Length: 136
Image (tube, rainbow, N blue to C red; front, side, top):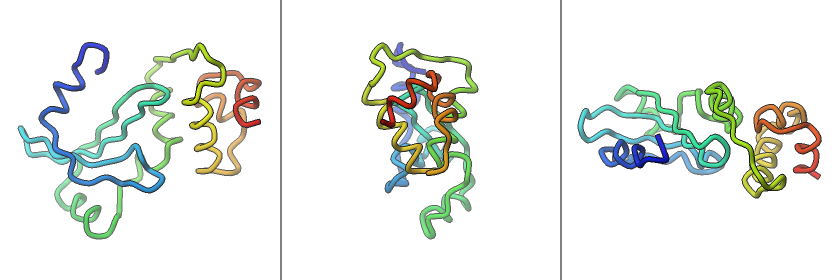
C-alpha cells in the first residue's frame, strides 16, 4: 500500500484498540471506524514493508483484551516474514549489514534459538554467507 500514500488513506479510518506489546512489537488490533470491523494487523516495516490484516470477531477481540489470547497467525516475526516472502516482492538492501537486517536476524534467533542460518537467509532473501555475517 505504501509509496503513494494509500496506507495512510486506509489507516486513517482505523483506530488502534490493542497493542500486543512485549516482543511482538509488530502486532496490534484496530477497529475500522467506517465498517466497525476489528482487524488484527501485523506491520512489517523492516524487511518487506507490508501490512497483513485478518478480520477478527468481537469474541476474539474480547479474548485478546481480557486474557491476552491472540490468534496464532502473526504471533512470531518468522510467520510475518514468511508472508512477506510469499508475496514475491523481494527487496535488496544496499548495505549488507543494514541495521534492519541485523536486528531482524537477531530477533529471529531470539524467537527460535534453533533456527538455522539457512532459514534466516531464506526469510531475509539474502545469501547464507551474508546471514552468517549478520549473526557474527
